[in-house]
Image (cartoon, rainbow, N blue to C red; front, side):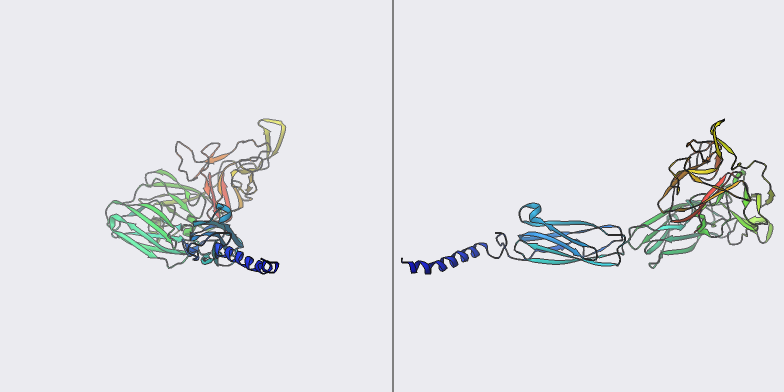
Length: 488
């Protein structure tokens, strides 16, 4: 073979080498052979996720490819999402199947409602398949609440026609679906459609047998996402019982009976069979009061003046008229639930108010170690601007200018905050001094913070703020009653 033949042969050999290389690799990348040369298969667990701001969701599904998977990419610019899962890098070799599960936390500052996420699977041959997951911010993960609902134990008095009136207000942050009332023993199963409203208030009336009996009642509120809240009540049908507890109410809106953190309505004294007494401070003239044995509603029993005989009280909510306290000051009210007889008298307390501003010894009886002006305060947890359980940095109360027995404090509270405290003097060194007030006394504690005890009692039952806003705390050292309730 001469020089010219060799020179002509070189291009032929080169092309032969390139052709052989091409045939050995086919269409795949990085020396991965074809198996079927088909595009990947992407099967998402769902094509639509309903979530909400600040909540995590999961992009899930199964991705398969006979040739082997290279990567999976998730993209949505509005979510600032651009994530590539490099399967070759993770496993060091192609995989034919991958269970996709990628968690993403939505920002609370996100604007918009609809966010389609593009899911792209790429195999080792460079072939791709796209799928779309729609993410919307209309999810609901919070159960409804009852703003008003019958108490856990209610009494219906036997009449010529005995009627149970069920009053409820259900609330949901997104959309209510229905409220259902069930009394199995009476074959009552009543579903009230809500139609997607956020709040539903309804009064349902049911005629009951006019004989003494007890029934179990269940009220369920559900939203469009099947989140539920359930209230169980025992309905007692009887003649007038000797109620163990009776409450004075000075509010007219039923929602105010349940929006407080504690103290509304106010517990009265049970002084004898069917006999009750309340001491009450009227902060203004013409305050209107009535009496209820159940804490959450004016129904089914509410004692007030009988319009047909103003010298007696009636128990029928629709007819009872409030007792009007004519002037500002303290009153004592007594009444009998059987006879309807009642009395109303004003009085002036004889005990001594706390001497706010008087010297408080920092070291017991030793005044030489210093004094500070006496201040009453709340020391505990969940109090704005105060340290936890710190008498040296508590929430300081203000003494009312007209009534020296009355102390108050306004505070901004956030939903979810847990609150517990004792009423105590502020002390620079953090000592717990007298006088102090805790809650209830005796061998039992109702757990409802219904009255205060001077220099004794139980620790306050922790309460949880359900709605953010401004709240008012009021405490009367004479009445030994306190309450914490929303004012906005």
